[in-house]
Length: 406
Image 1 (cartoon, rainbow, N blue to C red):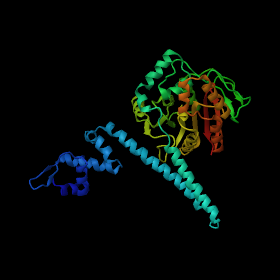
Image 2: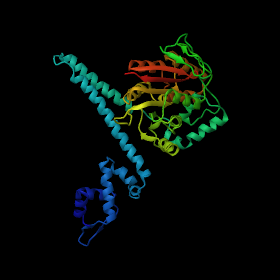
Image 3: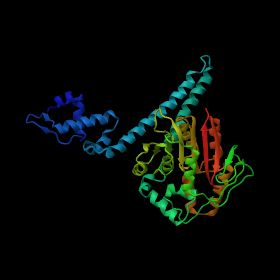
Image 4: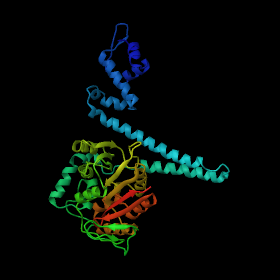
């Protein structure tokens, strides 16, 4: 079949066909004595597949990396490339939505607005858009989660067999594959109390009487118990649709699945997603991050996240909350379990303890994490239409849980 015939059959320009050949996507095309290309049926089918992948937005480089497997029908080989493109599309959508919101605010400025004030508002909108985009794009994987994926669950079990791990050990372990087997646990051995709670909400402590504004911490809580309790506070009924952010290998989602939830999981690590898919094939898994959720026109009955917020800065955590707010409706539940500081005074006291200890490993770990300020999480949720409370599990581990009211 000559190139003009292939062009007509596929609706693809001869220029595109030659370009794909030049880029090495077609292999060697035989030629007649007069120099005309002769395309075999397998060449045509390969071109057809290339055209489909290009229409889906895949780059030439990505197609080159997975084309042979795609021709053979190996979906697993092209899945990761599809996920990357999808993630890029969603990030563009998130950016466009933010710009639309900024423009909506500017469009409704009265026509008789003074010129200098208008200029100031334009500058503020532009600077805010630039700042949010910079914060979103400044996140980096300091822990190389891809390299941890295969051994992550095994390391968890190793620690559990050696001793009952605390949440702080498990939380740190997400960044260093449970490098706390020696039992060091700054912050879980005591509680920094300030005479009163700064949360301005109820402090419910699992297994103890409910208190109001007081710190009734238990001893160190087990990691698995924290995940189970988080799933309980999500108030899951069979058929409820849940979103697990920073799903990792699916440990928290497993508790949600056992209650009959239909789960979607988001993670920025391709290898964590693959490991989770092996363990929990019923979970829909999406590549992305909490500051640009890779879901479009979807809402969920509940959103959960475990020990993921502390891998972001405080400003990034605020953007993550805004993203969560976009995917819930009235009555939806939000459950955040993590190592948290009660307030800024608790944060400063904790850092002082770590620095005073002189332990270089602890100091290095603290440079990689930003434990959420529990009071700020609660304040944000309450000011954005949620009924929010918290349950403190030990001196450092808390669950903030909320119900969307409006």
